[in-house]
Image (cartoon, rainbow, N blue to C red; front, side, top):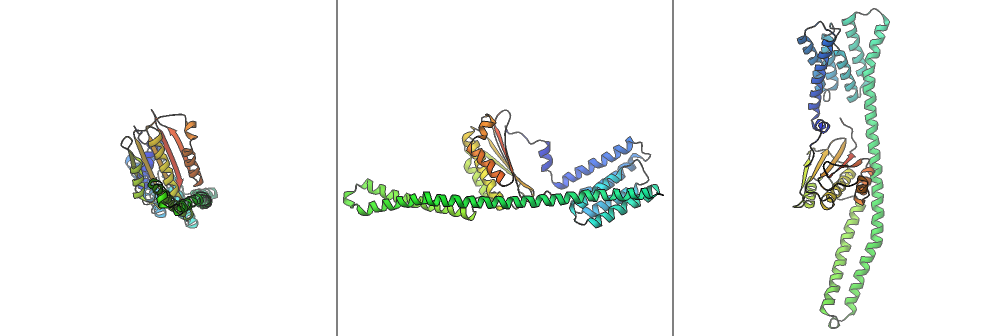
Length: 375
């Protein structure tokens, strides 16, 4: 049987808003527990109210980063008279998240430092320069971290885009080379076959040629013409970068149905997210899926194959699981199909893993970056 996804997979399948809500609830509970452990003088109800108020804006930090950070900071100011309550850490985290999502560092710095200075006056009434310096440095820190993470994210995006462009260029060059080789070799021979068959039919008199031989020559001529047309069509696809792609949902479903058999059905699960796929990733993912399912159905002796396709702004994930025969991973990796899938995934900047399943069977997992970071 196919294994059910683990806790990490279940967490990643949650909507971003749901994940943020869970984190907000956990943060609120942690604030209350920490305050009670430190012996806070305030009542548990007040601590719960303040903690929930400080953590609740985190649910909206993706859509409204700056307002969410200000709202959390405002709630923390209300609890400034409780020294054992660590609500300001939540507000600092909110400013860090806001700086990560909004490219306005000066505004974030002013708000973060200003809020901490107000908190300093309300909570402790400072009388020294050191206290002000500490507040300024503390206000700079979350914004600096968030900005650094945002810059790193943008750099990673650019690197993935450049890698994909380079991979697409290399693939196009390889396609052009293969097209030239096929045209010069196969195309030449098919043309020669047609010419020889046509010449034989032309020089031989009908009364001297047995009907079977005449029909055979006509069949050879027709098959050569058909094969030459198919080769030219394939070469056009290679040169122009066309072909089947995972962006075609109907085509993917048709592929899965075509490869499945009565003895080994193939089930498809698609997350149905309308995420645009780069052309090279869509075509490469289709070929990886085609090869993985073909191997499972025809060569693994499986009775059940399941396909999962996950589309996200950051990556395309393909998983093909079967319950077929188990063998040495090294032996499996030696096959041309697995090697070809791995090379195709690496050319697109992705990864491909082949792992054994319990009690038997295999899982082929490919992750192909799509050029955007996680929001």
